[in-house]
Each structure stands twice: as structure tokens, then as C-alpha cells.
Amino acid sequence: MKPRLLTPGPTPVPEDTLLDLARPVFFHRSAEFRAILGEVIEDLKYVFQTAHPVMVLTGSGTAGMEASVASALAPGDKAILMLCGRWGERWRNICKVHGIDFVPVEVPFGKANTAESLEAALKQHPDTKAVFTTFCETSTGVANDIKTFGSIVAKTDALFIVDAISGLATMECRTDDWGIDINVTGSQKALMLPPGLAYVSVSPKAWAKIDANKNARTFYLDLKRFRAKIAEGNDTPFTPAHTLIKAQRTSLKRMRAEGIENIWARHARMAAAARAGAKALGLELFAERPADGLTVITVPGGIDGTAILGALEKKHGLKLANGQDDMKGKIWRLAHMGYIDQFEVLAAISGLEIELMRAGRKVTPGVGVAAAQAAICEHLSRVS
Ligand SMILES: *Cc1c(COP(=O)(O)O)cnc(C)c1O
Figure 1: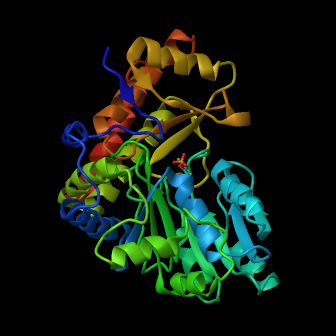
Figure 2: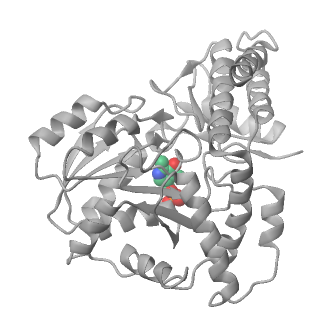
């Protein structure tokens, strides 16, 4: 059976990148590595749509999140947390550990945070040092309106800090133009690499705060160390996961060749197909404002959601993700981010049709796939 990985991290890795990972290990304090890191940083700037160097950290996405809290804030600093799911909760837990005085702005799972609630919170807390949010809330499939949030925060002294770990390179994201002061992503979502690296962009406004922050409580994740080593000639403060960085260069070249606008369009097309397919099967989307990197479907009444996922994997090689924590068995998460194309989305919808029929639900064979194909056609005609 051919396994198809359709989970929102990790995601499939292109063949040429996998071959890169099979190459012999080389020395990291070398001109060769510095040239590679320089190229990777340039291509990351393109993917982030920023003019400023992107820090490359060894660690999963969470390392990038903690680096931003620990570098930009000191214990007792006030922060507004826009929370709409499990990954927003991660901001809360990191802030707790670092003694941040946080103000949570919450909505129920499945909903998006609102610009109005952000404006109200900033008005009520003018001493806010930073606003934290999640671009794509991978636990619910919700996309937040980062562009609008950024324009609101930009009018204040607060930093705008975004977890774009599953959002970057799946939906339009213009780091500089949208006023994102610290933007965080990881290697294993849309960047077509295995887990292990975190990428953090930092605006001049954020660097000013970081430089003034004499109480930063971190050694390994201090962003200043990374900036200093880049300035010395694309070096790193500690031993980096340099074989991954080298492989990232290969995936980034692929992304450059596709073009960032085309990457956004491909994800929009796959998302449209997944949503149309699910709806045609009589299923409901869980997210009120769905993201383009994954589609989250509510498990219908009378169906064992976990059993369907097991059958999809064992009988068809289709690996979708379950809900996390309390959401287990209640939602299906179909990822279409990174090195995935529309035909894998069609495969997933087709498999879902088959397993829903086998579970006794009335489904006309092909309706989900037909609707998904129609959505793809419609999208392709838009770009001509
Ligand atoms: C995957 C993910 C994370 C977690 O990243 P790790 O790489 O597991 O540390 C955080 N936020 C979002 C939105 C994610 O999708």
C-alpha cells in the first residue's frame, strides 16, 4: 500500500530534499555551511516576505515561539493573547513559564478571534508590550485575519507576534507590509522538510525592544545571539542541525521556482476542493473562517470518528489527523500543506466516501470527488 501523509505536521518531503538528507555529514564551521545558511536566509526572506534576516533555530516550532517571548519580554511585562484553540494555549503556557502578565482574549474552538476584541483589549490595556496570535489554528482549522490585526497593533507601541507555523506559505502572508514584528514558523509544515528547525523573522521595532530588554531570561533561545552570528557572516551561535538546513535549501529552491503567489494559490485550490468535497458528502466544516493549509471536518452523529481514521490509514494508506485532547473523535483534520497536490486531496475525499459508505451512511459514490473536481476547475479558470 502506498502511504499518503495528510497530517498538519509533519508533512511529505520532496524526493530531491530526501536525497540531500542522505548525503555525508560535513563540518558546520566552514565556508561551505556559511554559504548554505546565507542562501537559506535569503530564500526564507522571500517566503516570509520580509526584508530583514530570518533567524534559523534548531528546535521545533515551539522553540521559535519561546524565543520570541523570552527575547522580547521580561517577567511582569503585559501581553494580550488572542486565543482560539490549542496552539493559542501554547502561547499562554509559554507566557506562564516566563512570568508574563497576560490578558487572554478567548473565543470558543472553531471560531476566529475578532479585530473588535483586539481593539477593545488594547484600549483597556494601553501598557501592553506585545500581542500574540495564531495565523492558522491547526487544532480547529481556523485562520485569523492577521493583516487586519497587524494594522491595529501597528498603531500602538506593542509588538505583533504571530505563530504562523502552519500558516506561512499556505496563505498570503506579508510579514513586513502587514506589520508582523515577530513571525514564527517551523520546518515541518509548509516548508517541505522534516521537523527540527524553527524560523523567526524580527522587525526593527522588535529588535529595538529586544535590545532594550535587559532581563531576557534565556540563553539558548536569545535571538540576539543568532543575529550577532549572522552578522559575522552567516554563522550560528551553537551547533545547528546543519544537515537539515542544507536540505531546507533544496526545498526552498523548489518553493522559489513555484513562486510564493502560486504556492498560496495552490493551497487555496486544495482547500476549496477539500471543503467542496466534504460539503457534498453532507459533512460540516468545523472552522467558521477556514484556513487553506488544512480542512477540519466535524464528525457526523452516529459515526465513530476515530474508527474511520483507522480504516482510512489501514485500508487505504491515507493518514489524516484526529482531533487533539477533548476534540479526539469529534473532528477529522485533513492537511493539504507543503509538498501535497490536489490529487492527494481527491484521494482523501474518495477514501472518506468509501469509509462513510462502509460505515452505513448514505453516500452516492463519487459525489464528494465530483464536487472537489468542480472546485478545482473553478479555481484554475480564475488564474487562467
Ligand atoms: C505544529 C504547530 C505548532 C507546534 O510546533 P512544534 O513544531 O510541534 O513545536 C505550533 N503552532 C501551530 C499553529 C502549529 O501548527
